[in-house]
Length: 160
Image 1 (spheres, helix red, strand yellow):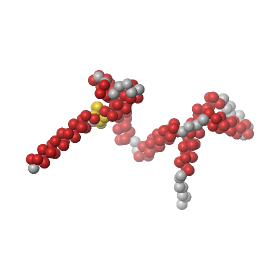
Image 2 (cartoon, one colour):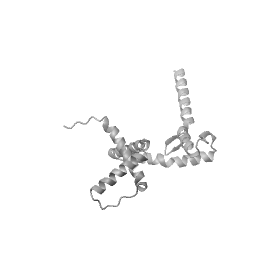
Image 3 (cartoon, helix red, strand yellow):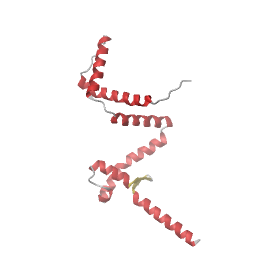
Image 4 (cartoon, helix red, strand yellow):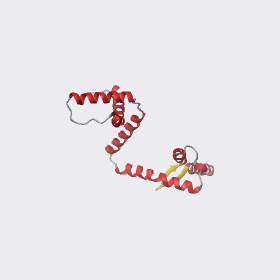
């Protein structure tokens, strides 16, 4: 029994030490890991600094800078409904995939020309902005259409 308690105690101490070694700080009891801190530092310092090379004051500033995102995430998890969480997640997913979708200037110009021709055919009185002013919006719309088309390609839709 003594041997079991000694081993259990040792395991607890070692696992606690391992967890402590990986914790950079906490915010309201939520852990910010050294890995998370290093990822933030990599972005902030372009790979020049790591958690272990930061002085104590720098570590404190980094944890204080990371704290709001932890607090917002926790509050969102508590206060958003399931539908709101799904909508936020869907929106984030769409933005991520739209950003990764390539749309050329040539594709945007072609879409612009079609829009302009359709407006002319419909005798629209609405002023169409020059291509350069509309290019980014057109590219975003085309990226969204590409992402949706890719999803719909493999969709199995049934109406009952």
